[in-house]
Length: 457
Ligand SMILES: [Zn+2]
Ligand SMILES: [Zn+2]
Image 1 (cartoon, protein in one colour):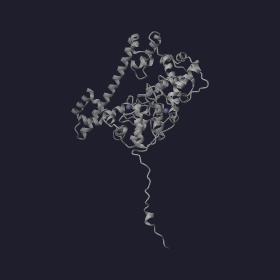
Image 2 (tube, helix red, strand yellow; image 1 turned 90 degrees about the vertical axis):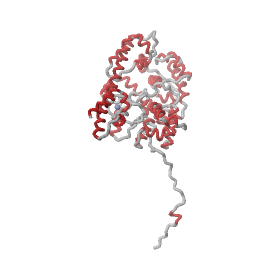
Image 3 (cartoon, helix red, strand yellow; image 1 turned 180 degrees about the vertical axis):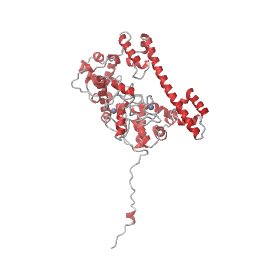
Image 4 (cartoon, helix red, strand yellow; image 1 turned 120 degrees about the vertical axis):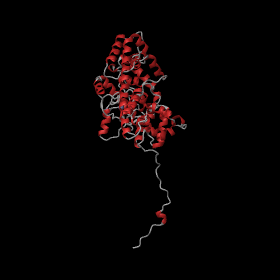
């Protein structure tokens, strides 16, 4: 039987094959987009580095920084890069830097939905003050669950809000210090890894004893409010598309005016009193002359039982009533003038801070901020208590430093031992490569440990 052979044209089609455009880096899909647990941009960058088996610093210097701005000099240098790592939380926020990152990551991965991994849709809505936590917070049980069920480990945008203190799924406090080395972990560092401490490389899915105890200490009503807040913000980050279509910033004064009208017949002073806010502040919000802090709007929404999303996108509330049980407690948010603050109440508070053995010691500056009283006023009224609290903090810092130094000394000895066995000279540079915190060579004790180890080996 004769079989007709293919013609040359049939075999070699002159039509060029249309290949879809390839992205330069992995086209990594962001996690949980359009849900309350949507991933944060810093987490995405960290996973992107991991997917290429490189450190975050390598991804930043080789790929992201060169196209971050037209003027490469700003972020191309080591100093420029450090400044990017220092502003970790800002990469997930609303500023100009976010747009630069989004542009370069979209270009590199061809993912064009990455703005949902930031708070860009809330630009101009809330004051930057206390909007995001400065260091990582996380739910160890979420990590552990994901690991067990072999899911992708990542950091939800929700955990970055300063106002989110509990996990809405596991109903427990988010962790703030590494259970192994007790340090706060920055959002974005040259060696960031999701789910692990960037200092000691330990898994963050376990709970330290102090943290477990502090969980038991959350009062029931506080827990209810914390969960409400986490859910309200979860709904918000899940709705970035809806928020993007809306002019949110302009809606805020309208919503506040509407709420003051409905709850206090337009009386700003009465409204401010109910929420322990300065009258002027509320007036400025109503006039659109200043933007509120997120935590204040959350406490207003909580007491009125309206969702934060409704507050931002609709302002025709039908009937509103303040639940007096849910109003903020006096001591923590009232700005107290030196003339009329409750000295007894504050003394009690300071004593409780001093005697508290569970929580991480804090500075007087932080305490003064929490009480909304000037630090000098506090030291004037309670000099001894304030000094004792500061001393407690200094002791705590010294203890941490000692722990750090001791660890480095042990590592140095081990490194010298290893190098000598291999027949290498244990120079400081070589030992530095083998220890977790080479920067600790600035401490005399660590340098001494090197000297000692050399003479012993
Ligand atoms: Zn959880
Ligand atoms: Zn650690």
